[in-house]
Image (cartoon, rainbow, N blue to C red; front, side, top):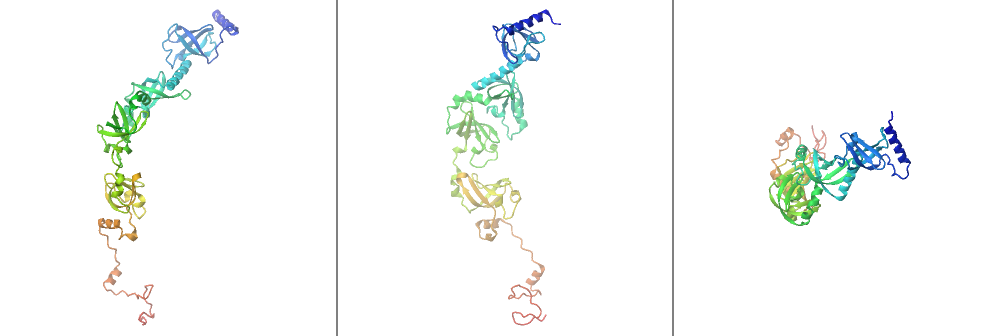
Length: 429
């Protein structure tokens, strides 16, 4: 049964709709400004000035923006219209929808203005950290952590990386919003970008080509980190540690080592360093020590499917392609050589500018006695086995009764019975 109060409210709404002097009545989906007139745990009543009373209840009280989490009577608030009139002739409103829109608008603003904010880490996975900005979930990828917080795990063990990332749960980090997509529900933040902004003045004191003194603070598969200056840190890629080939940076540097390095690149907060740039390039004198065609001793240091890497000396390493390991066809270099063993090679090519030196173990069969490499190989090779001699040949060699072959017979066959021999006599057999 409809009460007198509801009839009066309905009549009032009809009057408002009909009056051209009153503010336009909002439509479903519009956001309205209102004043809080009543607050409880389950519902909030709002006065939509000059129009009607609105109500927010249930799940529509949830607010992602966090603006309306602690409302009091008299506070101003924004809400989205869900229904013009509900069963009680009140306007049905939502903080959830208005808050959602407000929250994402705020994220867009933070991104566009480049504001540094504090966020709380809620979870961790192998790819990075789950965070919250207000009440919206976001993601901080591992690649967007500062060098200080980057999980340095030798070998890239994912379980150990996760262990290190778990240490950040329930901690606050300073970040910048770098990607926002409301439709996809995507929010990406970066600690590195925030740190970069704060370190701009410090980094601006350095330029490419500067020499720095620092300390090795971390060693990973792809290189080593060096701390220098005012809490700055740069990376020396494995290719910039030394002129010779390095399999593992930990074989070359250790945490705590004091080193000098050259700045070779500055990209925002990313500083790339080089140790080898401060060393004389040994390849520039390689042609003084090695010549094409020269036989050389070398130790196999690595075997790949396509060939082997050979250490000629501490600084010069060469490559012997699989096709240059044997005159016979082979499927795997390990069928011919072993890591750690030394062999004699022939130098095929030298390219100092490209740091390349080609080697070969093959010896041409028709030149086996004459090539320098062959002679070197012959000295090293064990005594060759004598070819097996057939008994018949053995007997012949000892003066046995084997028939002699007429040298004038080009086919090398024995003369037939009655056939004339070179002496002009017929065979009497």
